[in-house]
View 1: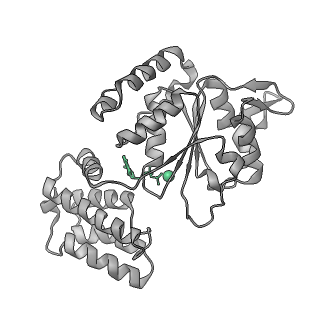
View 2 (view 1 turned 90 degrees about the horizontal axis):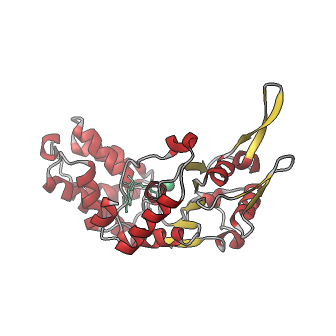
View 3 (view 1 turned 120 degrees about the vertical axis):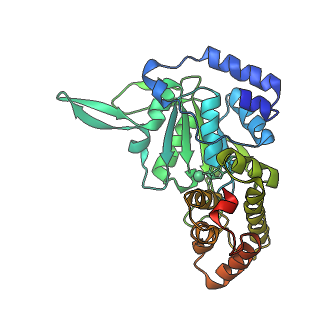
Length: 301
Ligand SMILES: Nc1ncnc2c1ncn2[C@@H]1O[C@H](COP(=O)(O)OP(=O)(O)O)[C@@H](O)[C@H]1O
Ligand SMILES: [Mg+2]
């Protein structure tokens, strides 16, 4: 809550979140699923949109380019609302059995080994449906039934269960990603959709300072500017979004802290992520202006 206040999130919303947390208790067995996120999500407007939708009982879909903080936001929301978190990544071949559960033998009896959607429904969890646009039809039909107004899960051979009132689904999707399908209209209509903005310079600087409190400010500013330069080039279509990788830049900073020369670190974290020679040259030029060859790790940390 302190963090939300620091971000300037509306006090009225903060009060309602506190009420939500008091109203919905957490089952003892699920307490270990309440995880403090590794990173805070920065962005007051987006936080306010997401928090108000969730307070009003809505499920939300986070859409945006990669590294816009979709997963960080989803994890932050589960923690803010004090709910256990269950994750499904639709990268792999996820079908309805994975979502809801499969029959297993236990003590000579057939039992349902419950899947993440079922567990969220039962315990009022926040279920994160990562890269939901990769979902197969079979999985989509399960999502339709849990997300519609009946809020029921019906597993053949077992009891029907009603969704717990604290249960929410948070979908994430990257558009324009190879292999993704157009997300089915009927599925989208079941969510409130948040369009994740690309990152702002001040936000990025905040993230770096938070992540690397031991780094020199001036150096972090150069890394921030490097990212902004690349973002501008990607927006203008001069390069793809492949080298625009915040996770990569953070990883590069970590290796610099470890003692690696900044240019080498940035090659691994950014430049070498593009496999197109022409693009790599452009990225290399941008890197050179911000992270000169003469820069050493002790210039950064
Ligand atoms: N607004 C933001 N607040 C905090 N971290 C952010 C934000 N935007 C991007 N990031 C950073 O971007 C990286 C990738 O975040 P992630 O949530 O995995 O992105 P996505 O799921 O959108 O691809 C993380 O290291 C995270 O710190
Ligand atoms: Mg993601």
